[in-house]
Every structure is written in C-alpha cells, then in structure tokens.
Amino acid sequence: MKMNKFKSALKKELIIYISIIMIFIILGHSDLFTNPSARFELMATRGNYFHPFIYSFAIYSVIFIIRKLIDFIGNLFQKKSQ
Image (cartoon, rainbow, N blue to C red; front, side, top):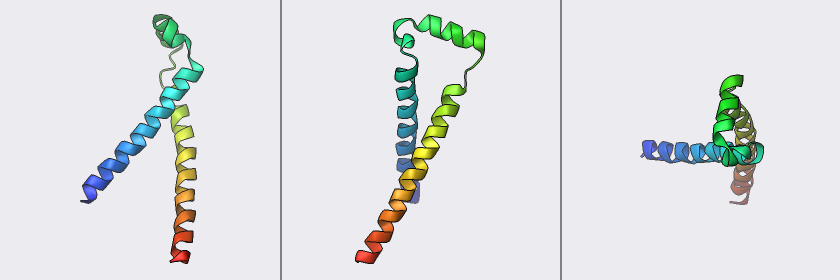
C-alpha cells in the first residue's frame, strides 16, 4: 500500500519537473523548434549539457517548498476547524 502511494507521488513530482523543463525549452530556446540541429551543435560546442536540469531543479525546489508550506498551513487550519 505504501509503495503504491510512493510511486504515485514520485510520478506526480516527475511530471511537474519535466513540465518545468519543457516550459524552459519553449520560453528560452524557441530556435529548437525551427532549427534543432543548429541548437544541438551550439550546445555541443559550448559543452553546456546540464544547465537546463540544474536551472529546472532550482525552480522545482522553490515550487516544492512553497507547495509544502501551503499544505502545512492548510493542515493547521483543518485541524483547528475540526
């Protein structure tokens, strides 16, 4: 039972993280859609393969902390009203 809950939570977090990466791709590298070979060639010459993952993880971490704070505050108010 706990494993299924863990798997569903992990799947939800992965979807959020991948969504953040996709949003960054769309907003930051629109040339990826028009000329992907030039984008990949530029990325290979600069050697910056991991910056999208690092930036996305930083934004994901901030969003995660905000979500958990909101959940915590919401749970405090639910316990008081019961």
